Length: 59
Image (cartoon, rainbow, N blue to C red; front, side, top):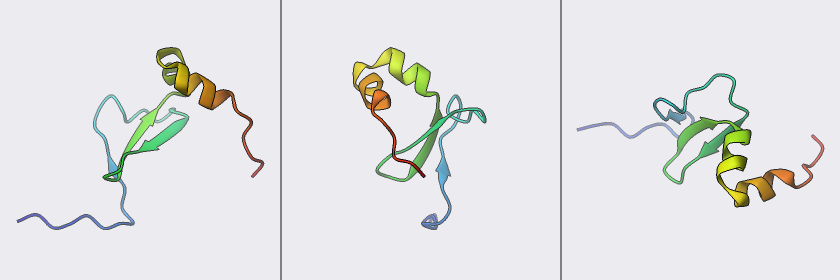
């Protein structure tokens, strides 16, 4: 029987979602982290293109 994952340890998606130079980390509802490129998402989806064109809050 497998042990449940700790909520503090992210579960990483496999290749091709492990890019170290990715500029976005998307997390699924089950806690899996996907490292992706904003440019690829914008080119493939007008929804992401619109989302990334919105002004971001200052940190």
